[in-house]
Amino acid sequence: MNMKTYLFIFLVFSSAAISQNIDATYKYAYGENAGWLNFKPSLGSGVTVTDSYVTGDLWAENIGWIRLKPASYGGVINNGLGELSGYAWGENIGWINFNPTVPGDEIDEYRVRIDHNGNFTGWAWGENIGWIHFSSDSPIAYNVKTSWITSCRVDLNDLASFSAQWLMPSNYPIYLESDFIHDRQMNVNFCDFSHLASLWMDYCPYAWPWRD
Image (cartoon, rainbow, N blue to C red; front, side):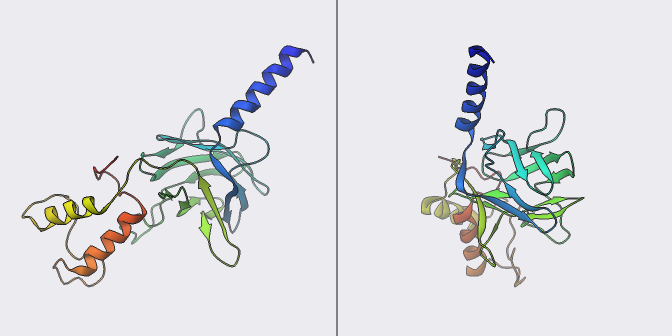
């Protein structure tokens, strides 16, 4: 093998290593039927989160390589706020959906998201392998974490601005209704506002315009 070949291999692997932004410790998701999924394997390109996509390859001992952005079709999309959608592809297991449709789930609770600390949450679904979970505290703690952080930030000023607009006779934001949680009394109360504030502290919901 000549010097040019060595140099080419070095550059390829160096580029892959630099582009990865998955934490070296917090790099595992888990599926009951798939086992552990490693988002920062020692070989291959690893996984990189960008403002638009999640790219690269992850490795699972039981099912092989999974590509996050296939060349011909699919791909895992990041809407810039850390809310993921789209499909990854595994040669041995088929497509994996990062925003699965679950009956009765009106707020995309199962959707894979990245919070303001870079932690992946939620579930992905593969028709041939079932559910993949991105974080758990027990019986074994695991999660996937990236250094990519959404540019969307929510602070008290945003919350005050939203509350003022919510109390105005207006249809903005157009998809919010009173009692979007459990009491169904058709009036806006502290429970609604508290629930909304809690969601805001985790991530900026899709299409809300407060961004740094």
